[in-house]
Image (cartoon, rainbow, N blue to C red; front, top):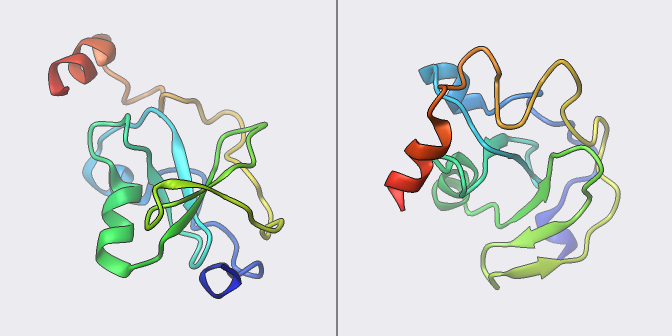
Length: 116
């Protein structure tokens, strides 16, 4: 598993890279354990973390939420073990989840429910 994890690479930022580029929002954030890309989770509208895996083959992610340290392996579709990655280990305030607060629509829960 260690060939899919680079403990020296910091996260790409404190927000979903693609959501920032498009002006969208997310529910939770995930960090690629291989390259540090931060993307939104599958509960989000755009599912950028999964899209990153499909585009790059980087199969291991870690939650980028405060207080969470679990890893997920897209290939096995199961939780995985992993080492401590380079800091920071989560986004930090004033960032929010869902977020960012300035782009979160009032009806965000309805939008997610309609997508399912």
